[in-house]
Length: 252
Ligand SMILES: NC(=O)c1ccc[n+]([C@@H]2O[C@H](COP(=O)([O-])OP(=O)(O)OC[C@H]3O[C@@H](n4cnc5c(N)ncnc54)[C@H](O)[C@@H]3O)[C@@H](O)[C@H]2O)c1
Image (cartoon, rainbow, N blue to C red; front, side):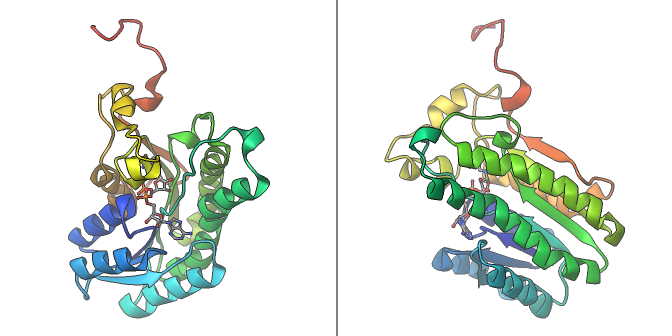
């Protein structure tokens, strides 16, 4: 039994689809109610249910966790995946409210999710919590101070939670995707500009990632296959973090 935030589309929806295919029952949480309900309907009533979950709301988290426990009997897996990435701006032109909003949605929300879910997962005998960070939780990037700050914070949160929750057999890890082909990098989020070809060209593997590839990593971390993994960072980035420079050049 799993709860995935930000599951109406993109990586969260791919994670819901794969977890259901692997036999899990999933509560999909998001603020995009029509899209989230459609994904849940596609997966079937017995396997999936959609719950409105604004991850900045403590009461929404409580309701989503209770929905998982009452609908499916228990909760073992939390994937804290919801996130926002506003258009880049220098720090000097970012308002404090704009910065705080990203921190609320990407960082504080993950804290709220762990706070609501961990006792219920502990009652069920343990499980796995996955926090979706980013390669920008490992390296900085100009123009996205709030995003980068929030994604770095998730690493610390995952490690702290792993230390606190290990005694309840709850594992907590962060994942660090590189560029993934979702709305977040698609033209509709960039005023029509398609940044994907340039991103792909800069990647060692020559392409950006697919949400289904990230779902495979989440599925591993959610399952007993990763029973001895906790408090760690799992990078899935097509080589983005391998290094900034190839001395052999493009023709090698
Ligand atoms: N796409 C990338 O290149 C990339 C790379 C690294 C990390 N990530 C991270 O992966 C996660 C998933 O993003 P994605 O790539 O699927 O993009 P996406 O924009 O398609 O999905 C994000 C989801 O989060 C939801 N969301 C936003 N604010 C919310 C809120 N307040 N409450 C509940 N849900 C909310 C959105 O409605 C959406 O369904 C995010 O945390 C993102 O930062 C994305």
